[in-house]
Amino acid sequence: MKTLKEVLDNSRRIAFLGGAGVSTESGVPDFRSSNGIYKARQSYGYPPEVLLSRSFFDSNTEVFFDYYRKNLLCPEAKPNRAHTALAKLEQQGKLSAVITQNIDGLHQAAGSRNVLELHGSVHRNYCMRCGRFYPMETVLNSTGVPRCECGGIIKPDVVLYEEGLDTRTLQSAVTEIARADTLIVGGTSLVVYPAAGLVDYFGGRELVLINLSTTSRDSEATLCLHEKIGEALGEAVGC
Ligand code: ZN
Image (cartoon, rainbow, N blue to C red; front, side, top):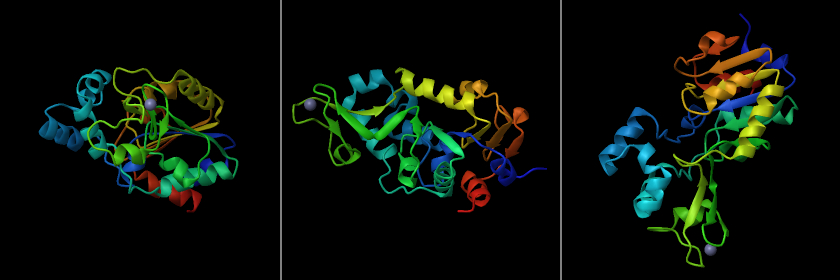
């Protein structure tokens, strides 16, 4: 059986598609995990998909920000071996894009440059009235509803439930996957939209799946690893 290192050595244009599992090794909790759903129901009486919906943001803004600060902002999180390995592959000219469902900015913190953030980023926040930009710290260090100097509400540039994905980001993701000779999918069980559908655009040689548990596409993979993504990628890339 071929190894991940052999696949990477023989690849010229890799695209990476990642989910929450990439960041859990950095200590970022997955709010969609069974524990995350349980905690949300216990503390707020709602599941995460309600707390993080646009209608809830509009109608219960203060509760939204309380949940958001405590569960989606992880200022202490640092990149792990998976982030570092992907940044190194990009520097070597072998990887063209990291496409992620995560909003924590850890790929950029590790040095990756072409990062397509399907669900936005906690590091970008905008006043809903005047459009002024604010960093994560403004939201983190505020209480109640964070307000701009103009009085407008500062909204995280994070795609909420009921909101559409940014079409340009999605189109770029489709293009990168369609052009890749190797697609590595990691840290996702491929059930959350849009990751599952994006895999269908891949027409290259090697489809690599790295996830602790089985995924819905395991049978289609040319290499399938059920292990921690940080260890698998770190070992293969040597970092
Ligand atoms: Zn403003």
